[in-house]
Amino acid sequence: MKKVNIGGVPEHFNLAWYLTLKEGEYKAQDINLRWHDYHGGTGAMCKALREGEIDIAVILTEGIIKDIIAGNPSKIVQTFVETPLVWGVHVANDSTYKKVEDLKGTKAAISRYGSGSHLMAYINAENHNWNLEKDLDFEVIKNLDGAVEGLTNGIADYFLWEKFTTKPIVDDGVFRRIGNCPSPWPCFVIAVRNEFIEKNEADLNIILDTINNTTREFKDIPSIDKTIANRYQQQLEDVQQWLDITEWSQELIDEKTVMNVQKELFALNIIPEIVDYEKLTHKL
Image (cartoon, rainbow, N blue to C red; front, side, top):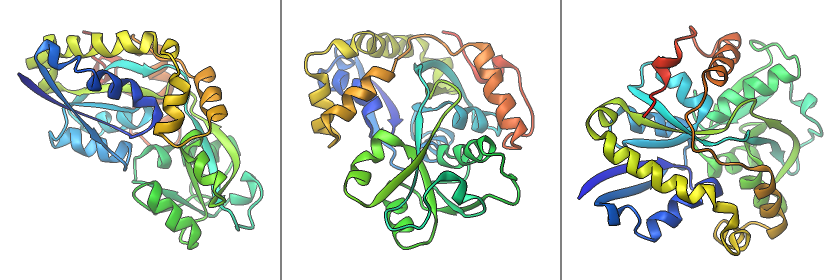
């Protein structure tokens, strides 16, 4: 049986993977797919791909594009979630900051340099016409638990993270969400190490066909809203709202979208150059 390691964030976006694994759908096709949670998000997964700890990552679009340009020997093989990610802009509940404009020049908590929380802090700054050199400062906090500690203790002032994931922390009165910052592109893609693509394309096709069959019908799974609410400790109405605005994809990300992401990252000085579509993607 072929062993394959895959990584992703332990969030509701990836429930389809959990369901297919629970049903033994990959083992039925002689593939031992092993899921690994990455609480540190994009930066941690980029490192794991580079070091061969995982073969496949379900990862933020902007983060993996940046890291492939920086030398990560991987390619995007498919979009996973077509719709943008809605990032909440969070402060500590007792913070004096009331609106996003108040955060100009303060310190953003980020999981890692090059992570989604880091890149989206730039997007948020650009949206508010801040000076990207003078008005941004960062504190590395590793993950969501680190952000709770960092904002509560005043080590950092604000934190961008997917708003439905952080909603329970807001409901508990730990964070206050003072704004939203949607990503200007599809949020999650599936990236695979080049070596794995070259040697295991047939297995990769089986894995993608399996997950795609589930995501196509994900919203029609009986009581899926209740399952998500229970598993991820979220309010049912929040889950229903999230399902309404979220669409999965079974296609390779298109060239226009990849170029738009690169143009944005290049304008923000996050990547040093814009590269060809073929350097970032692989069509199976």
